[in-house]
Structure formats: structure tokens, C-alpha cells
Length: 410
Image: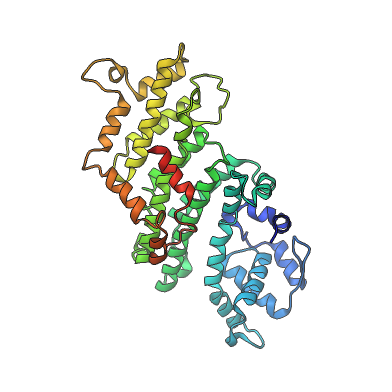
């Protein structure tokens, strides 16, 4: 498909893709009435005739998965096209047969949910690379569906947190197999959301103070994704692998949003009440304080990569402050809070805080180097062969951007 054709295919789906956390919508009276009329016109102008048998299937699917009736119709047609109609359901439809189809379509529906979340990833990637075939498509289409980047990124974080706390639906509590399937799907969708968040922040959405604080808070509050409401349903190998994948990508996200590479450039950090680029976390004294508190109160081994990244941020802040002729009170206050004057003195027995933090990371019992080695050589995120063997749900292992984030730190 040529880029122009792809753009034409994406445009009718603009509203749907703009709500990445609920692509299939919710049941509605308006959609139900359209299905019941027997003729549905899709956003791209295609008219679908809906027979009585199809109506029964569509309404059963919509009820089973609590999705919009028109989306249920599209899902049904796609299922039939890809999988065909189960032989047991041929002929006239009964209520039990409709329920059977709704159950049978579950695996296909769950895959479609995850795929729909990842539709935008190739566009995010293409937007920052002029050599990509989809560069122009991304430049035109993404601003149409994401008019408020920070709000979009925040919605991903909110949906992710909701899923980590989601309780098992009542209808699955007497069915262990269905309960496990639901919990595993929920976890895989969390991973997909984190992948989208990574690519959203990869040059598309500014790393503003409030947004970076929200991202860090989500990472730490969930222990990099390990804190789950349905832990007892996530004990198999596949679930453990997905939890490991979530932790790995969380490590990258928390480093990514600190934009370490740009901090090395002259005048990137502005200690000013009126910075030329206010949409950066280091232009907000309050955000710096909040991030420092989050990082320094979580010193377990799994956070050591982020801990070291924050040490570098402190070093650049300190260097900028040393070169500044005048520092606004709001910044001098937070700099003294982060790195108290006693730690910034020229006493021989006192080292700057960032050096103390870096040395602490290198202590053998912290395990920073072991964590890095494991991440780069044994994780599905960085090793394609391991991703395949382990059955990881990572969309694209060993992406250049993943390696670039760690390279920027070291």
C-alpha cells in the first residue's frame, strides 16, 4: 500500500484512533439502532447489510465484551473473513449459538485490542525520521488525531494504572480458565500501553514537568509494573515474562523522559523564571523537587538505572548553577533542597551529591552492572531470539530507539 493510500485508510478511523485507550468504544443506543435497521454506513462510506442472524451475533458480541455495536459488527465481519464461520454455528441462530460465537471470537478480539493500541507506533517512529516512507503521512495524520500531546500521554498513564488495579469481573469469578485468560490479556494490554507511551514520548510529546512527574509516579507506585491486583492469576511462565517485559520498558521510559543526551548541550538547562522552552521538566523547580523525592526514596536495585540517570541530571543542574551569574530564588531553593550546601562545599571530605549517587550505584550489592548486563543480553526487549523463544508480547524487540536511550545514559 502506498503512503497516500494508507493515509486515505487512516482518515475515516481518526476518531477511533484518537481514543487509544478505548478503541472499540462502549455500547450505545445510537449504534444499536443503526444495527437494528439492517444497514450500517461505516465512516469510510462502506455500507454493510446486517441480516437477522448477524444482528444476533453482533448484539451478543457487544454485550459480552461491552463494546460499541458497530465496532462489534466490524469485528464480526473481520472474524468471518479471517477465520470463517464455525461449522457448529451454521444455519439458523439461537440465543445459545450467539453466545457461543461471542465466546469463540474472544481470542481474535483480544488480539485486535492489542493490535489497535499499536497502530500509531509506526507513525510515531516515522515522524522523527525523514527517510521513512511514512514520514509525510505521520506528519499530517498524527496532529489530526492527537491535538493535545501531553493530554494523550497522560491518558495512557491513567489507563495503564487503571488496568493494574482492575478487579476480576464478576462473570469470570466462577470460571478459573476464563479468569486467567482475562488477567493475562489485561497484563498484555498494559505492556502495549507502555510501548505506546515510549514511542509517544520519543520526540512527539514534550517532557514537561507535570507529565514526567506523572510518568515517574506511575512507574514507582506500580514497582515497574509488578504490583497487580490479580497477581494470583499471573503465576505462569507467560505472565512472568510479560511482567519482566513491563519492568524493562519502564526502566527505559524513566530514562527516556529525562532527555539525558540533550542535557549535555550548552544552555539546554535554563535557570530562569521565563525560560525560552518552558515545556521541559528541568524548567520547573517544583517538578525537580518532586522527581528528586521519588528517585531518592526508591533505591532498590531495580531502580538503579534511573537512579544513575538522575545523578547525571543533578550534575548538569549543578554545573549550570556554577556558571550562572544569577539564579532565581525558586531555583536556588530547590537546588539547595536537592543538593544541600554542605554537599556542594569544597571540603576535601565532601563530594558532590551526583558523585555520591554514582558511586552508590556501583556498589556490588546494588547490582547496577548485573541489571544492565541482564537487560542487554537476557531480556526479550533487547534480544530478538529470546523474545521469540520466550513467547514475549513485545511488538518489536531490539529496536534502535531502545538502545539509543541506554546509550544516552552511558
